[in-house]
Length: 112
Length: 112
Image 1 (cartoon, chains in turn green, cyan):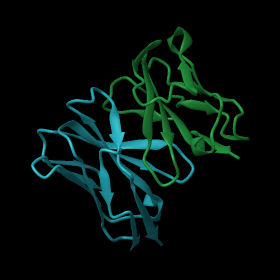
Image 2 (image 1 turned 180 degrees about the horizontal axis):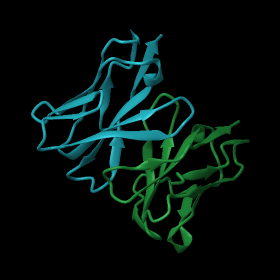
Image 3 (image 1 turned 135 degrees about the vertical axis):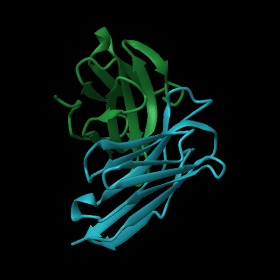
Image 4 (image 1 turned 90 degrees about the vertical axis):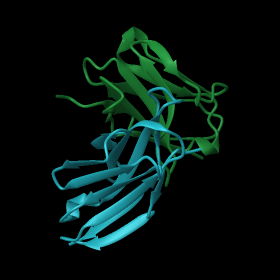
């Protein structure tokens, strides 16, 4: 079974630029999550989708972050404009239930 | 802020020894999970323990849960070099819906 795919794996941008990350979840998983993991910390949930609807985006900085999941499959997370403190690994996960989430390899973002 | 706090932050042991990591959390939970993260990769689900369970085993893993103390421990027996990774506890709380909240993690190093 193919796992969660993410791209790109690495991205370096300058502050105030825009960036987008892509995620393809495991086939059949209705729930998709985006996490931000700052170095030395645990992942923090940014947004959770159930099919193409948002379940929880309470921790998403909506002034600069946006996410969508068109057709309830792939998802993109965008940051516009980026700040230095956005440097982190962005993890996508999918699941059939909250009890076991399957994570992708992540995108390491460096904002200079 | 993070729900869980792992202790210790870092642990270094020899192959064959046992490793114990602890997790404390703040609010009442439905379930507690442990995840492993190898360097530069996504997280892998290890085990889930429900709030009405006290102990659970899976292979070389043993998890305990004490809801009165709001704490959990993960024991890895007969450790191997391949167990070197960061270990995170994650909780889904009674008031947070299905959102998983991760702790800061314990970095385990198993020396051959």
